[in-house]
Structures are given as C-alpha cells and as structure tokens.
Image (cartoon, rainbow, N blue to C red; front, top):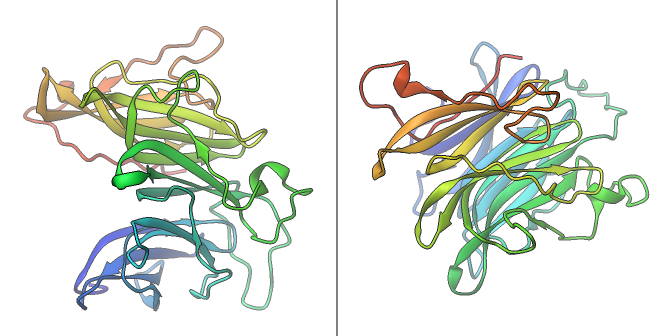
Length: 308
C-alpha cells in the first residue's frame, strides 16, 4: 500500500524507479501528486504537483518527467503540461494547451527508458520531445477534435535547433481530419511514439453513433499528419497503443453484434507509419479477436505494454 484516498493513477519507468501520478482525494478538491518508487517498492518521494486538478498522465523523457493534467482552476476545463525533474521539482511553469479540454495522454519520442543522470551530473543529450494528445474543447464545452501538442524535452530548445517540435508558442495540431474536414468526432485519444514521430488513436463518432477507432501518424519531420488513417473496420472504440521497437501494437474495444453496450477486445499490428497494411506485400495483418481465444464475455477499457 502506497497511499490511501487516491484514484486515477498513471505510471512510467525511468530506468531505475517508477514515477506515479495520481489524484489525491483526501481533501474536498482533488489534487494531482507525483510519487517515485524504487524497483523493490520503497516510496522515495510524494509531492503535490497541482491543487484542484484531475486526470494526471505521465511520461519519462531521458532525465525528466513530462506531466499532463486537467486543471480545475480555469474558467473552463483545460489541459496543463509541465516538466519535472526526478525529484519532483518543476523545471518550467505549467502551459495551458490550445483549445484545451480533457482526457489527455502523453508519450515521449526518443530513448525514454534510459539510466538517469546522477544527482550531480546531467545528460548531455538534447534530443527528444513529449507528445500530448487530448480532446479539444470549444464554445459550450463541445468537443469534436483530437489535438496533438509536441513539446521539446527542454523548454529552452531554440527553433533553429528543433524548428519542428519547438514551433510557435502554444501551437497544436488537429489530427482527426480527412481532406481538411473533421468527418468524425474524436474522443478518448491515446498516443505512442517511436524515434521519428507519434501515432495517435481515438474513438470516432459519426451522426451520434459509434463509428470506429481511428489512427494517424504524425512525423517530427514536418509535424504534419500523414494522410493515411486506419479506422478499425468494426464499430470499435478507442485503442491503446504501444511501440515494440519495430511496429505499433493496438488493442481496441469493439462492438459485438451491433449491440452498443457489449464490447470485445481486438488486437492488431500497425507499421511504423501507423498503417495496418505493411509494405513489401506483408500485410494486412490479421486482427486477433480475444473472444475467439477465451470463453465467455470479453472485457473493455483495454490497455497494453511491451516487455522491451
């Protein structure tokens, strides 16, 4: 037992310890806290990141944490992002992301799992970026877009060093559009990264109905969404993604037999560009249906991780 009166945790591995963010619900208004736990389970630190905040998510970027959370102190719901060192010390002020909303997810591109620098040392590498996917909010709190914010590992990175990921202050990318139109509403985004960019997936709605699980790859070489989208052929909900080192693996909740309240779990493999059809005549990969492998009803709210 690490902490009572806590909910909605998220975890990342630094190479020597776990970083865990969670909602502290011991007070009237929940607060977001960060704790680190060593590899044998000993609690190393537990610090408050933001009062009156919910929905924390965390990623490790070589020598620092990237944290994103939903701040309740705004006039409307908003997503904040900030960087923290391994001791929970803030490295910059929280940034409210453009058209901020909720349900954020975060990933780091580059070598995220690596031994940290010592207390007195510092990593010399300047590479890597955090990608934050979230639902964009507009007037009347309506959400229809999945947005991506790409932020360099170090806030001070100049545009001439990383012109793509530094970009304009506050800039984000609209992801769920086809031919410059948002043909489907997007919600519940997830994100994973390789060394060249990010793949996002989300839950699509069309005409108020479940439409499928869409995906898109955004390259750091231009930071523009690559046109290919890979919606799940079934009426699937949003996926969870993991990068294996050579391809992405996605798990979906899929609607069973047209019943909107019954879901089963599907797994599919995507190439490094987020497509379910690999090049060189290898694809498409067959989707694995877990209801074919195990008796009884399948679950939902899926997640996935790789062993490296």
